[in-house]
Amino acid sequence: MYKLIEPEVAGGLGDKTEMDNSFFPPLIKTLNYEFDGWLGDDILESFPCYIMTEVLRKGVEAEGLTGIYFSEVLISKSETFLELYSNRDLPNFFWAKISGEPYKDDFFITEQNTLAISEKAYFLLKKYSINHADIEYL
Image (cartoon, rainbow, N blue to C red; front, side, top):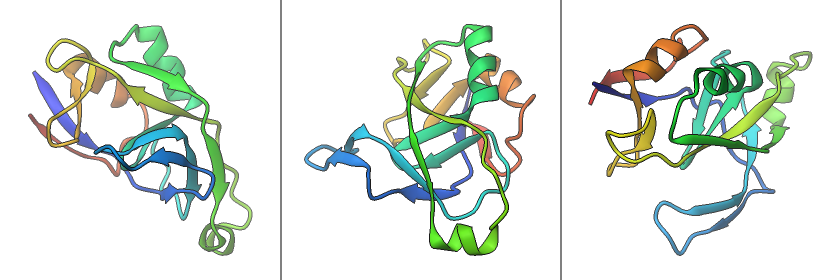
């Protein structure tokens, strides 16, 4: 059984993001996630990308979950973030690249461009902060 997850959106694609808009969804070559706020979740979204904290990444890798691999992400803070959270440090984040096949892997992207996760992935994610994610059955 699979679930759809729409993670917290804590910002957007920053100025240093390199993408090719001739595809849909756009093909992201370099990801700059710019924070406007952050409610503390370990998985975040800014269409069409996902990022995870280092602690969640380690959990995903230790569990051997499939359909996902990680890459570097450039993190920046917007003026809004700096005004609202001037003393707030951010943990290390990694770009969670979703590569899974539908209904075969633990992570995959649906035809509606939504992230789907297996029960195994869901049970792992529940051990971390996903309080602001919307989750429903697929």
